Length: 62
Image (tube, rainbow, N blue to C red; front, side, top):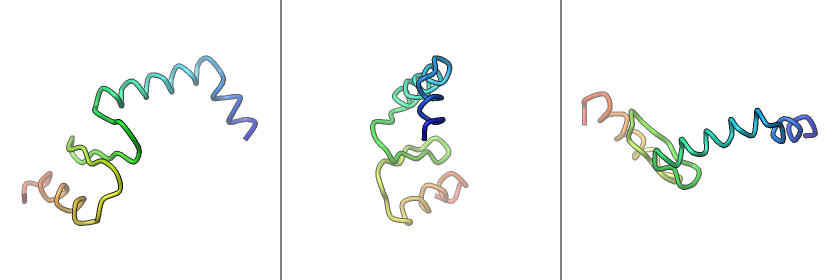
């Protein structure tokens, strides 16, 4: 845990984490878990059927 905390506190890691947070916000991520299936955003815990439908649509069977 100490190594993780030291890494996270470093300027380099902190900048990378901040960049990822900003990228996520730009994509519409407001909370976790958030998933993307071929660009389709799925928020929160969802039943398997929601993911299967998104996958089927991404495969053109939708």
